Image (cartoon, rainbow, N blue to C red):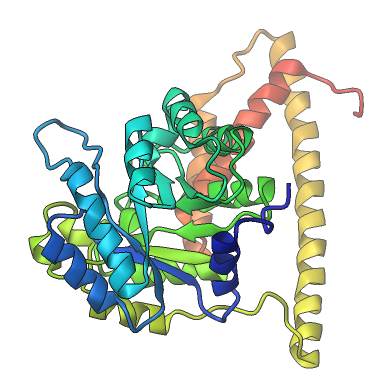
Length: 366
């Protein structure tokens, strides 16, 4: 399936991403009133915003929190499109949401993180959208860091005949997210992009950061990784927003963020830069080969250790030894300016593979 072939609206959307700046989706976390929606939309015009997002139905963790004003907001979004030309985009989580949106001429929808994590809910939304091939649907990553769930949600929509699809990276809920509301875990969207190489990928720094001060940095990181656009929450008066106030910015601040973002060249065309880049890539290829050879050698030693342990009835898992290896790697990372979380993840994966190799013993290729 060629995702670059779509409805005229989808092709225009993709064309916008080729103009030297990212596709920009902006608008409030929640539609609160007609006046709030229209004023925010008016102040978002005149820049690079092309899509106006607003939460109509809000899935909340606990009952009693503001859950959106519901269907009464849909005529407000019709007014936004008529007055400003911005294309409205809303979240849908049930067949009722889809049907109400379609009745009000909403042709762009997103499936939220909580819904993506529920295959039954995604299937119901997909069936409600069946036959509406002109609708553009963005699929946010699931709350939990699970690439298969994200891919599965997209495949359910594809099987319902929907081809105008995009993905939104909004971060993942983990035990220790560090400075973020939702940890980026960049390797997961990159895996997703390899599975769907033609599908637009949008970054949602608002939900990754959970606050205003790191929106630009996350957005720029995404563009450096060849993402296609940004979705940033913008409110006429962020501090008084009814939901997620800390992560929203004024339209004027949004315009400034977008102006400062830099879209990198996909390929270096200038001779000097191209030659230097090729040199660096060759160097990386050599280092990667050395890394793989060292890993292979390490696993040979690990299998010998496994044979020794089995022959002497010694437990495979040696926590004290593992802690020594782990702590040494962390100290090395600190000395050499390496990201600690990255090194922890690498050595955790190596340790898990080492235990497997010790348990299963010699492989035919040894």
